[in-house]
Image (tube, rainbow, N blue to C red; front, side):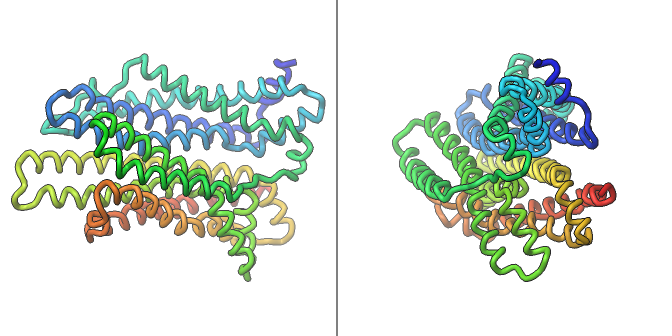
Length: 440
């Protein structure tokens, strides 16, 4: 039975090759970036001189700020095209296939796709390592050997990617196993409760207290670990509360909607706030990073003043290099996350687009609604994430650095680039929408 189910599940359907290619590409990007980020960070942990703890602290914080969103992107990759897969699996359940058979087939499909992408990611990491090794710190290049991960660590990352894919597949099966008819008829909805906001507020409040108190009572290494963990937890909290915020905002827009595209955009967000959040979650990460980048630029400006020592100037230059690398990594994640999620969303909503086409709605109206459903939540997401990051940084460095003109300019520039990336991807995925209308 299991082999028959697996064959039925993996049998190519119309457009299925594109659907499978999307998560494979996402896993390849995730694996490449994770391996490269960890490889770059590990190069600092072999240093033992007096200045080494500073570099190690900054590397740990940058690692968390990049790896946590990468894991979120990995989870999104595992959930790509979930609606289409859920419908096929719910059909198997209604035909009498056991939950165990459906689970086996789904996990097998997810692991195979993730493995293909992860192996491509390993190749990407090895190909990028020589370029990363050319980046100078403390006056000399890091070197290929310092940034490429050994086979054991690469294997651990691959196992982690496959486990993530398996766990996401199993968690996504709960609706199919419990209510296959509801999935098939699209009568199930993904609800987000206001309790998310309460949990997020409590978690951020606790983080602020710990950030303010811990550096004065803990050792250097412990403080680094705690700060990195708190920043990572705050990013996770943003992913928790984000869908609820978008739901509240879309509900208000729905009541005020006077044009078809505004009405349709609000309904798209309300239909699945979690999916809407995945479209703009990359901006939340970019805005969070922007505050750290702006504060870092202001801090470097102070460190390189007229009376600055040569060692401080060298440290500031290295911090600047680290900021540039971190921002480039964040922009790559924004582009990958938004692009893949938008492409997947267009493919998963083909039936909706076809129905709208048969009802006489022109493609221009549908496209405007789709872009509005993505761009409208961007401002709330960008401002909210930046405020959360500022609340966490103020106890550590003070408000003066955040509100410095150079800091504010950097924050605005980083957020602006992130929004521009999202806007560009909405136009880049337009051919997919046009293709859905042409096949209608």
